[in-house]
Image: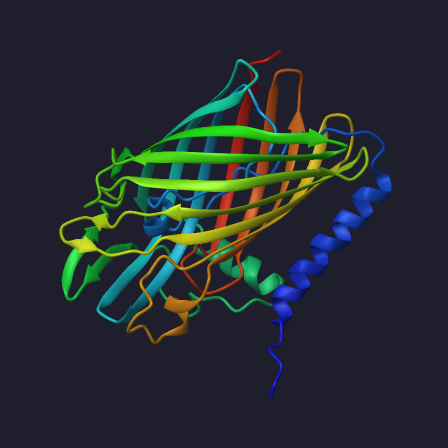
Length: 334
């Protein structure tokens, strides 16, 4: 049996990330450790399904603004599903977290989304060429716009270029299980309310929920490893017609390494089940598990944290080709 081979471009990207982390660890002298990157799968038909982003096990009192810009190129049809998506997605998300009586953390997340033809296609092509990664848009027109999803020939979702609208509002609760000897663990649950317009792709029109196990391991003064595993109970997308989806599992692993007392870098990996019902599907791109690799830098002042990250889709599945994220977080406990 022939063994599967890791694509050369992906191997080079991973080698560059590992080499960078090795250099950082040899130079780090103090610590500023603030948790995993606030990055989630922003593929338009996944982000509306209570898409998770990795969380630390510890509590937080904060107010955050996250800006994510993603490029998506996904044109497939199989098993009665048709997807014609070539767009750039911008999401602005407001997140509030509050520790209540030291017993649990309460959170609210409010997103705004807009779609357009964008400007990233040429830059993404150059980025992929630099690492020897095959570009999915080779030979195609740059910066075009399509966003339509169909089921059995009927349109379920049709996005509008330049349109903007609120997404589904998420309410979260986190409860610590234990914290001892550098280890910490917590359970987190949430409910996502159907406040976004499902026909235009801003929400899914259904109630969603999630439960997750969160763990942190402080491996010395300069390194923290964060791990998450959970399950999303996703409601169908109720657009012009119903687009059925399945519940899905996910897992994330993040390595955070300090550069100094105020700065750090984070390497992060995220994988999930495909949310599409698998019966009758043949094409691999609709059956593969979406996976994202992220590399980010953050700087923390006395009250504010600034975080920038780049995320690459390492499988041709339900995930953006490239994601750029900027998050600014204010610490409300100081």
